[in-house]
Length: 42
Image 1 (cartoon, rainbow, N blue to C red):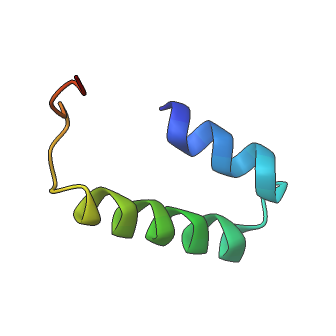
Image 2 (image 1 turned 30 degrees about the vertical axis):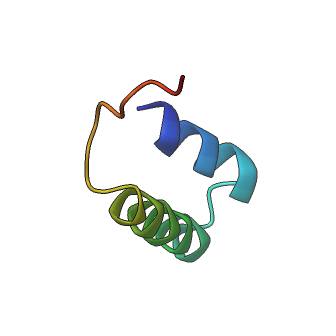
């Protein structure tokens, strides 16, 4: 997945930092409404 690749690239493969990055992305996803397809902006 692109998100996983971005996090690995950003944090250099350190497992602890990768997990922290994935947790952050999870929070962002939840804040956006847990929807994969978001409505288009006008």
